[in-house]
Image (cartoon, rainbow, N blue to C red; front, side):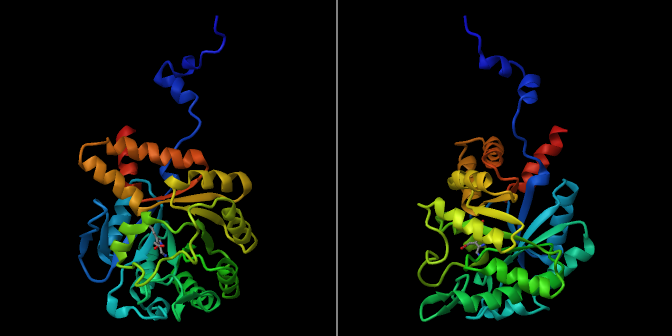
Length: 326
Ligand code: PBG
């Protein structure tokens, strides 16, 4: 006699659904988008099939389509011409630049869309680093000034959530103070809290042409070997005023998502990064895996690990597949 037979709770779809512990909803997703200069321009990122760098006019269309599919939140990254890049990321402070003007245009056209922006120097830096480079070093405190000014430009343009992805020490508090002093008390901060020095960012750096010109990012991004260290970052970001804590990448760091979820009362976000997307697309194109099913399983695993917010390049196709189910 067996009193417990766990298979009874798996015997039909209705019962399986009844006892299902987690759900991924489009409400949980943030869709990252790449912006380029020009009109009517779209070019696909070679290593990210289905993901395009879009000029502002086409980006608006992409946002409209996504909103109609139920995606409400977007994270915008600018891909800038090399001519505009310099050591101090000067273009990031240009209020009339491509990035702020596009944010303004999006918020004017779709006030209901949630726009998250990126704060880091790399898309604008001739060095390809997230901070200011002096004598081959990425200097922390001087970078903070630039980051805070960048955040203000983005907040003025209408950003709902500021996303510092740079990993400088103290930047969350520095940005929070600058925002509050300038009346942006309602602008949120989603901190890239535990951002690892990862090889999974390769396709993203192709998309923005933002790979470091020398060295790597190991003096500011975290060592993939560490998880307890993520708790220090989480504690600091919380004390400094972060509204969300993010773990990045997601899949090789599900344990870190779980750790932060267990130790924090703030919502946890996870960034399902470019390389994670590229691997699924490449294997699916070869017919080696069922890409749609693997996508859903991956998003579920991130949710199950404890992330209530998922930044993912799969957002649109996931939302489309959900529409068909209804
Ligand atoms: C840099 C930044 C990176 C990503 C988002 N912001 C790359 C890096 O740190 O080099 C990666 C996102 C992805 O791979 O999808 N500020």
